[in-house]
Length: 189
Image 1 (cartoon, one colour):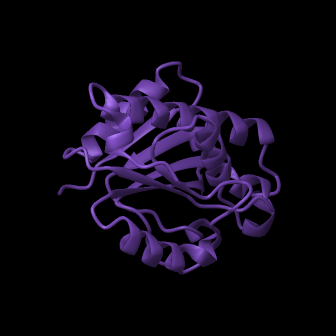
Image 2 (cartoon, helix red, strand yellow; image 1 turned 90 degrees about the vertical axis):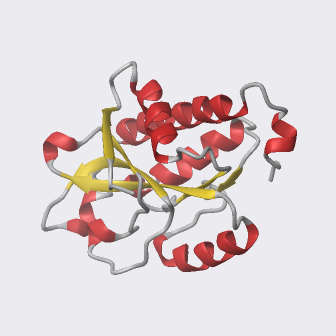
Image 3 (cartoon, rainbow, N blue to C red; image 1 turned 180 degrees about the vertical axis):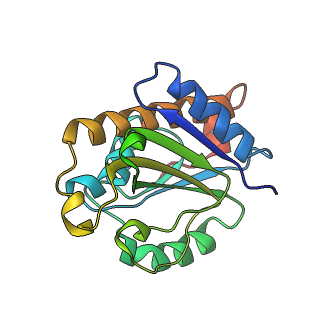
């Protein structure tokens, strides 16, 4: 499969629709999605994934969601999560969500890729890839002071971006469940 990437500005009112279309394109076979929301609640800029996971749980979607503010999956735990998910959900497509850093002009962009993500890459960690599809939100500018940048991230940006991503995912799950009995399509965790 050719590598594709889709970018959306979190402040565009059509971003949720764009997320749905990008996820449909990346998951052409409409496989059952499992969501892994990577990050930490200890660092503001790294809390995008757990916030998305928490918002998705509150929406009571009929799908598995791993990584919330109450039960985070940090970059260090990605290998364990990959093993567990491959055993528990062998026929599912794994959609990973994480925060990222980038150019100053890219702050506020949500990127969806038809490949997994490498958590911790922005702070020079050499960890494995997780997911078949990746959703990243650029929350801060890459600088030489990587350790401070996540603490200098604005809560408003992270929170709003998490809401937009969660809304897009909700619309995507509703699209997948259209005309089907959602209780037989997905089990609720």
